[in-house]
Image (cartoon, rainbow, N blue to C red; front, side, top):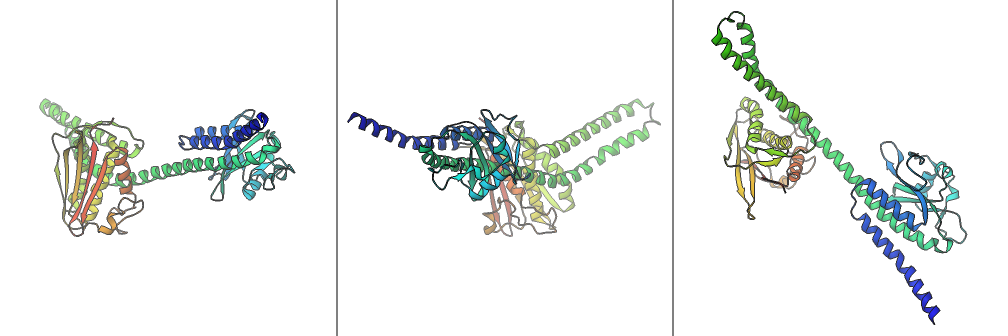
Length: 424
């Protein structure tokens, strides 16, 4: 009786163990932090279940059309394991074709277990490895794990099913990381594209603004030889020229900062000063096109922790969009800042940019922040790429802020940006 109960308890414990192990493994995969961390957790989990002392994980590299080494454990350290495995490798070909675990041939094992001996591989031929686990999503093998397994034949089927379930959880985590990385790279490219578009307008304004300082410097150089004995002229004009040189230096620095800055860098900033700087740069183009820019800046506006160049990119983008909306007709752009008091007592700053342009239809408003969506026609001034407002929306969100749009066809459009004055 006692022996029977002991046998039943042992069987029950063995039945429960795979579920507990899978639940624990899925919990580890549920919060992917970084590729190295996830790879380590995947390898550790699969090694334990397959009763392995060493193994390695390889991840698909789309650009190079190969699988690159990510993590090793045991005897397969980063120095001895192959750094890459070509798609033409027999192991890869077999794994891609069967999409099943490759294990040692065993007549007693389940028929769905493919024999590792069927894939005479360079990788498995180099190292004492006898188990290959593909990580497949939507029919595509994005990674695989190779290990030296000591699994007993009696438990092969049960452990194989557990390894398959763990592999599915692992591939989901890896897929999420790869998608996030692809989105991050696309987002960086979008920001760079939009920044270059705005930079063209800034450069035009820069060329105009340095003309007057250069004129005064040129005049001083021409007159100085014949009036070198006029101390009053030399003294006063020298100060004017020096101020103009400083002015040009500041403009050049602004231009360089805007062109090269990419990563967020929060500093204590005066939002009114940032808004004024953006209006300053677009004023030349606005004057040429008969567009009036009205500026109303709240004197009590609190300072905030902002990325200066990113907020400038937001404001520049909205100002350029407002000019495009007005087109060749005379119109007005109103730029306002105001202090907002939230219900919880926190102070926020609001930037409002209103134009008297053609407006946006209600059908388009729902998609206005979608990537590659644009209402600008080809060939118009500052032709749109459909990326600008997507970037604007992302930057505002990165600053824990909010952006709203209100528009009426034939009347105009108003963008309102709200930013917290401080970050916790």
